[in-house]
Image 1 (tube, rainbow, N blue to C red):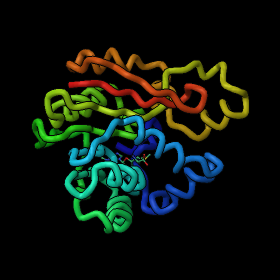
Image 2: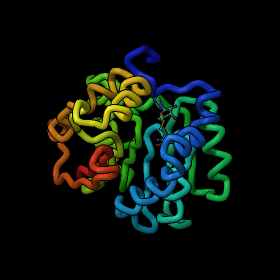
Image 3: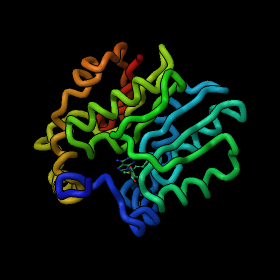
Amino acid sequence: MTSLRSRVEVGATEARRYDLFMNLISLGYYPYLIKRVVDKMDIQPEQSILDLGSGTGRNDGFIAQKIGPEGSILGLDISKEMLNLSRRRCQPYPNVEFREQRIETPLSYQDEFDRVFISFVLHGFEDRQKIKIISNARQALKPGGIFCIFDYNEFDLGKLWFPLRQAFVRGECQLALEFLRLDLKGMLSNQGFTDFEEALFLKGHLRLLKATK
Ligand SMILES: C[S@@+](CC[C@H](N)C(=O)[O-])C[C@H]1O[C@@H](n2cnc3c(N)ncnc32)[C@H](O)[C@@H]1O
């Protein structure tokens, strides 16, 4: 799905530099931010977590500490380099597994997970693909399970401080720009999710949106 509209698929070099890049553009804040996001996901020991587009596995390292040895994490990604990095990073946790899987295609998981997490992935898909990913998440969740989406919040790009706006427009793909205007709660409601809760970060420009099955 690599196109000018999306940059969510990454090459091997980009994958290897991903964590460093995120650290640099956030001036070192990114690991702390992710830790705060994971704290807000209300993850309990022994829970099972599905991570869609798991990347380098950095988020899963934090989640692994919450679920303890009796919980489990399954991370799905399509980048072989990302999968290598995440497997290496989460080697200390035998209950964390990563599989090569395209997340917008039908998944075989049914009522299995307490949480489905997707972090900085959803904005890179066309709406019809977002709907497939949301539907996959719902099917994979146990009844009462929570879908946790960490991504850009809805905001008016025109009101962003000019240098930041320029950085966003130059650095992000067309789909990310469109995501800022997307009624994500409406899309989730149409797929049967309810009870929305949100936590905002970086002056409201980033959002953890939680939706219940
Ligand atoms: C921007 S990174 C985010 C990684 C991680 N979730 C994080 O927050 O650090 C996007 C990730 O989505 C993965 N990805 C892109 N398209 C995908 C697809 N169709 N199915 C599964 N993973 C995908 C990429 O390989 C990459 O690891």
